[in-house]
Length: 521
Ligand code: ADP
Ligand code: ADP
Ligand code: MG
Image (cartoon, rainbow, N blue to C red; front, side):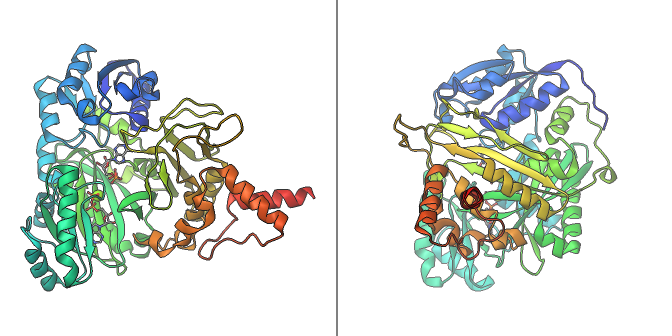
């Protein structure tokens, strides 16, 4: 792919946070002017400063700003934008928004409304791909009306089953059921949760795949029947059915190269058949025996796209923007060379005990650096900050990704990076922590030393299988300082600074203090 800089018409980025900045970076590199939109809560946000222009679109709640198609289209018109990039979340998978952009004479950077309709809904998507010989997870052919229907299905496919909200996403409205007795309550609970979250309580049911690995194939289509894949990502390490560690290549597919080949071929075949345009992801469950089942397609850029960029050297947003501008010559499959290994972790403002959001003001961020390391964030770094993780939006603070020649090297690099990283809540003059911010940094430090993660035993229950990740005292600490103080306290008490079973490798950074201490003596 030749690099071609020239002045291009403006692109409006209908999103916020790190993804808005990430898109703007590539847009600027290619010569597009960039237009940001922002809500009340985002007046002083980094993505607004980063773009060439910016337009206020409404109150903080997404439904009064980032979800308002009309406001966003009006902002695009006002600033002379020709393109609209939706990022992920918000309006990125709404066919009506694609149509509204087209009607307004704007180019939506993403798939067509038709592709979204065919692949956007999970049940329709499964029907579409099964016709094209891509195996789906055994499931009910459509929505089920009550718990009795779930029971019938469970008897047919054998327990366990997974109840899922038809309108679901982000791991919400999902219940695993292991016994017949649990079905009525689980059905009702999940349906209620879905109604509250998505305004639609309809449910369907799937067989629960045992020893599940979440593996996805990144594709890119030219909209005319041409498509390539950019390898896979494994995102099995999840909490509450949401990804927290993503990597490429997939540890489970390293054991089953035949499965990998079939999944890649099927993903490219379906993309070609549906004349898919732009970046898309086929999500699969792969079981311990290497059998694979289609879960859903995400018709957008994915949060974890950086790991694919690391192993392919391709900028996925560049592909998206050039396709929208009618300038993309789709690379040939042979030109996509997968090399080395990449891991991304998501850094969240959340309580590491139960993984519920814990947003709040940020006092200080020390950002890691070094070779083959990428930091995607929309929060300023430095010793004294005014930033705040807003309660209105996704509490992700940053994505940290690394590359290594091998997986071991990537893991080692991630360990050092996480040790270097520090995120703290603000402090009072006397050094007390103020505010509500908690982060999963200490949890991630332990995760990157957990035997199952280090060795690539990455089934989706890795976190519950390793209770020491969420239960011991270090993960309880809000700030690193507290944990360091604790380890020093132990030192002076002369107790052994051991790390919980299941956690291996180099010591957790806080324990490194011991080595430092001892070398000083
Ligand atoms: P992905 O499927 O891209 O890996 P998830 O499965 O974690 O992301 O996310 C589920 C839904 O939440 C998707 O609609 C995604 O677009 C949205 N989402 C996830 N993380 C964020 C974020 N940090 N900001 C905005 N939207 C997000
Ligand atoms: P979402 O729209 O929330 O992303 P998905 O259907 O992609 O919903 O499922 C989210 C996660 O739930 C998957 O990554 C996987 O960990 C788990 N999961 C989903 N379906 C199954 C299944 N049939 N068997 C086992 N695990 C599943
Ligand atoms: Mg999914």
